[in-house]
Length: 377
Figure 1 (cartoon, helix red, strand yellow):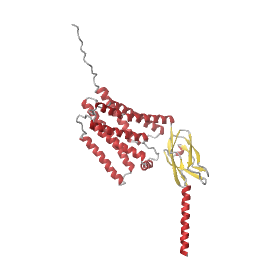
Figure 2 (cartoon, helix red, strand yellow; figure 1 turned 90 degrees about the vertical axis):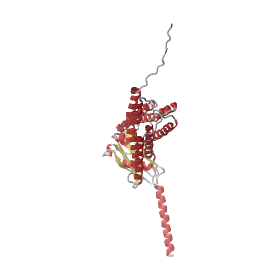
Figure 3 (cartoon, rainbow, N blue to C red; figure 1 turned 45 degrees about the horizontal axis):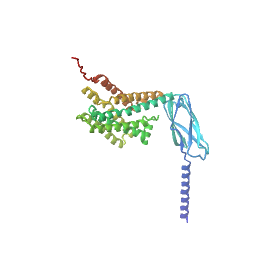
Figure 4 (tube, one colour; figure 1 turned 180 degrees about the horizontal axis):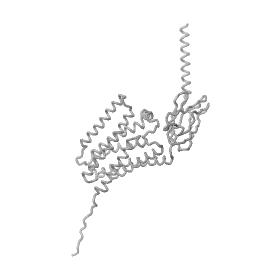
């Protein structure tokens, strides 16, 4: 009888514990808050905290500041230390006052449980923010469309003579590396969390248009290579120098992969290695094409439309980063994505070289047809 009593007691205790766990699970808060709240200096914003269901009792939600771009976060914004979500309520509002440009990250806590995170960004001007977005789309479109003129030129001529194969090989490798970097930092949650831990300000340098651009560029690199395989190429091949450099780059990527798997470096660091590969490729990929133009004393086969659009994209890319940095008082934005900054800077430099070659050094003389005048006898 004593044993049966103990079994019953144990069973009732288990049922009670399970019931408590279910109640705790049901009462757990699931809050919806904006990820980012952006304000101008000396303005205010109303932030809404909403619950997926009405709470059974009044709940105190603490706002714990975990990052501030300045030593004292109160010099950037004023926000309450805690907010009360009343019983039976599904939402509550609180007001944030903006003072100076900067960034503050606050975690919402209830019963010592981390519920959510809000990033407050105070900028100089909303107008500048809109201008920055417009500029971003301009350079995105210019860079994206810049791949079409060369593909059209190759198709029209049914020839890739004048298009350097080392450039094609470097470009293909560069955009593979850039796509890996962008996809990882934009789409993989684990990598994004690593980035936020390393950069508490939470400024992810990769946007959706960066991902699309790199994948779109990679597609056209494949199209160029396909055209080089199908059309007249004048006996061109990828040089041994280019093959050696590409072998070094991909060997570095492979070794880094094993180092990351062994947890000697983080996966975020491994992704940044791909961005450095892209940057290195950008530094050298135009050299073979510029030298070929010099050796041939001609830019025929190398589309100037590609160059002009690439130049436009590079200039606007750098301009956007400067505007964003000023608007946020955060000049790390310029160097936070070395690939993006380097891509703009070095592309612009080489585009100037190509425009000089095309319009000044190797201008094709105007062709005239000889006209024979008949003289009267």
